[in-house]
Length: 220
Image 1: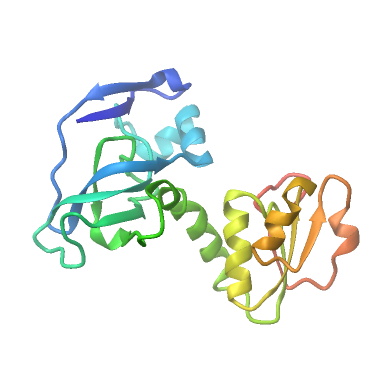
Image 2: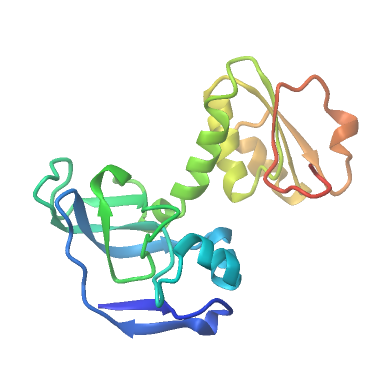
């Protein structure tokens, strides 16, 4: 099979398309024929920064980056009962370890996967996992029905999931974005919109129960 191997930290020229042996699933794993992947900011930072690459992967070289995948099950381990060959699945694989997503075939623990609903494309599924799980893990343990929540960058990867999750949990949601994304943010369920380019959110909002900041810097 083909995969992109990273031999050293740096630019995308260090990702070398190579022919390698197809992996075989362990007892608790499935083998997935990759149909789509998602590349997140963490992928880029780890690829570019030598110290961060070493911290996540140690001295293993070359290696295969990536964690967000969607595809079709082509083989199952002997202990797997939740999936069968032909199932369309997606997941965040072995994050933050060896996910090996930049490859034609990927092995993944069955417990880290879910079936893709029939109405969802492989591309949409692959783009969901890391961003949606980040929003879910940040919000679910910390907010409750009736809370007043400010979500920065509501049109971003994490933010657009966060709005929907916060509304599902019963919160009153205020979100920042550019004016161009106002209608999108409101369509996700936000109760109020703040245009960060023309308005100072800190002068508008008050009595908040929770703030989700995926930007940092001056916003924090």
